Structures are given as C-alpha cells and as structure tokens.
Length: 132
Image 1 (cartoon, rainbow, N blue to C red):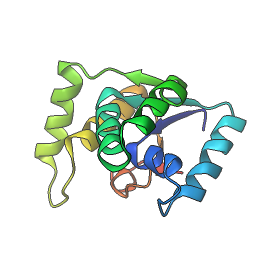
Image 2: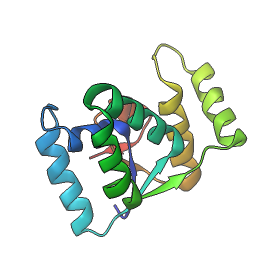
Image 3: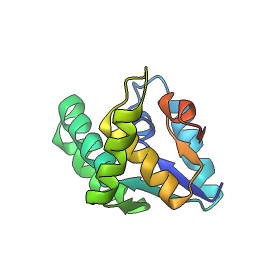
C-alpha cells in the first residue's frame, strides 16, 4: 500500500469535523503517514476539492488546504489524453452515474498502476479498486 490515490471525499472528510467519515479519515491519513505512503491525486480532484471547500466553508479553509495539505500530494495534471480516457470511460459506462472527476481519477490510477484509493466514494470499489 505504498502508492495511494486520494479522492475529494477523503480530503473533505479529513478537513471537516462535521463529516460522517471524519474520524475514519483522520485515522486513515495517520496510517498512510506512518507507512510513508506516496499520495497521488489529479488536478481535477483539486478543482473539485477547492470548489467544495469554498462553497461549504469559505476561503480560509481552502487557503489552509493549499498551504498545509496539497503539498503532501503528487498531482497528476490532466492533459488531453487523460481527459479523453476519462470521457471514454464515462461514455462507455452502463447504468452508473459517474462524474468526469471520478472517471479521470480511475484512468489516472490505471495509468499509474495504483490499485488503492483513499476515498469514501463507492464508485472506486465498483470500478475495481481497493479503498481505505
């Protein structure tokens, strides 16, 4: 479990004491730190995270996230090929409602050969990934 993809759902749970998964997220991040795990995410997850932080909590928590948490993540910047791979997954999906952020995350994880996601979004397990 050395390389882990970090989803918006885990970030928000960690940062918000009001989130139902907050305690699990705090414990989970502590465990990832203890194991010296490499944490990955995408620029799309960052966009989603910043949008949710500002909308729900205001600018101050978003600034704190940028200074204190974002530097812990290795960011995969979404280019045209990754965006297109995500769209291919989105349009080939049958029955499930997925976001573009989710499917781009899945494409990035497959490209990087990351099998574990720190996420509280059931779509990751449905897509065949292990979740923490």
